[in-house]
Image (cartoon, rainbow, N blue to C red):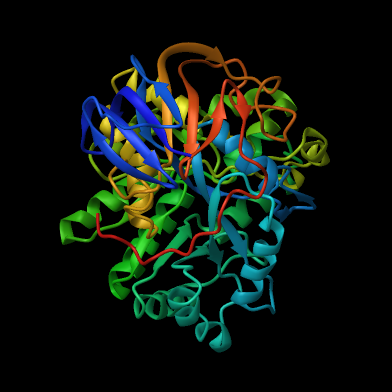
Length: 459
């Protein structure tokens, strides 16, 4: 179908102008003032913002963890994403002990196959590194289009690797210009504190927060920064939460080191008071935990300063019945919360509307930088002739309230319950097809494509 979007205020990471967009097949065919094209469908975007579809690089769909599965699978997760203006996501395929990286990829591909409403790809989490695994990186990067690999400095005994393994992974991935990402918290420090609080019978969600203090993230982030400097690999810290960790990145710039950094809406907008709500605090039990108001401000400043490049969600929802498994022991509460659907609207309302970030920066952190870092630009991440027609028409004035009663996540609570936001996704196009309009999903399950990715575009 050919589509003409007229009179919209088009926002990219670098541009802000009013024009028309003509879409043919899956791509943007023309952009200009008063385009005179015959189209099968015309949308008047007067008074609306028009920006590229969001890309969320950090989600966990249908993931087994702590005795449960994350409650959104690739069907409900990609559907909720579209309602929130996110047209593509990158999930994590996690290697099981004793298994290959290719096996992890195959497992997660099978979970997603034929289910997705939006486009998708995978990172691979390396949890069991050895000489056999070392031989897999070249094929995954060059043939499979999987160019990013996650490592864990925490979750000892399950996911955590040591520094020797880390530097070995970095050096191998660097050979093929791939990227190494990290969950940067000190697993040994955390394990010590968890054991201490359990021995003192301190088992409420408040002690989840206290067992992962800022220093555990600051130390691990600094260590990862140094390992990345030694190897020269493209390096990315996921879900950064705090001032101490960002200062390690800031210090690295003094030696001309480029570190890539991601944070999440919960770390920009919420603070540790959420852990003082009795067991209701289990809704926000995630790792790393939500921190202090001073960290909120540091991370917003980091975005403005170009030290924080991406806002993902770490979307990892669990049903309340699963959270209740930790009613008497915070270590048994599955870690994670929903957030995929609300990333774009929250960042617009709390970021752009409150003058914390510009409209161009909003597009940068939700789409363009993600596309560049993860090898999708300019097919994704911008509105330009030849790019995929992943486009959001957005009402900057419409107010609405976030609630589990109205969200599209398969989760019976919301991490932002009752938040009034200004700005709403009205219409979404995915590869030239009308995907969301008038609060209805209009693409069929399975329309989403798996995309092979290229190596990082330098930003």
